[in-house]
Length: 287
Image (cartoon, rainbow, N blue to C red; front, side):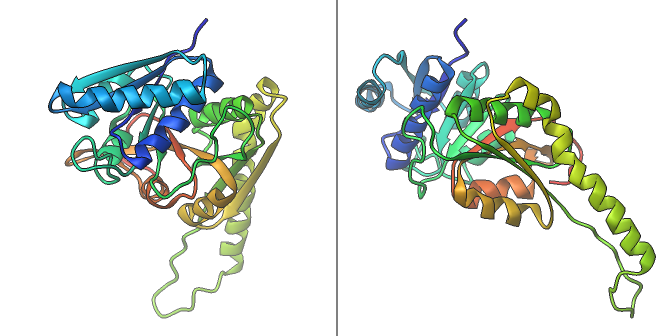
């Protein structure tokens, strides 16, 4: 059975072309159709951009079913609607002014905060690391806790589609407040607590991947738990990755759903494209 389609937003900018290439490669990997969307204030503006985008895809990925959809409206709302039932929505993080401008801090972050299906974000200063459906570097999975099962399942499937190894990273920190006036030197009791916590945290990534190893025996997997800030560890690891997959932990704020600081840091600074797999909103999160 054909998988759900891949949706990509375009606007004629260089980063939108990179997003288009990533989306086409993903559609080939997933064996599904590609839908190219352009949101504008005047439909007459959409024709040339969509025609050029479709021609590029047909040239680079012959045989891939492609459709183009011009729509009037706000870019975020359009892509949310078109991507609601999609296997993946792909967007660039910089572009031209207007809808078109898929500007990080605007369309990309609003989509990330509200999307109900997986979202792939390609930044403007990233070169394409996966121009085709074949191998192109490791898939990196960042997990916050053993509840990130949906993101883990997506990462395994992505690694299998790419024929790539999977690296799983879990970062944790230990916060201990020393009494006022005392040096923060761990006492025996605190050190014992740190050791117990370390054992528990080390088990998290293995617990998450145990059942998935059996489902994807062809995927080489490396797991690691690190006592450090999650943003720092994951950003550093993206230097060797083709893509990073993380759960999009969101919490309700005064202005609606908001991303956690780790996810936001990845969208701003990751060295590779970022795939966000949405989870239910919560009132708080360690992200």
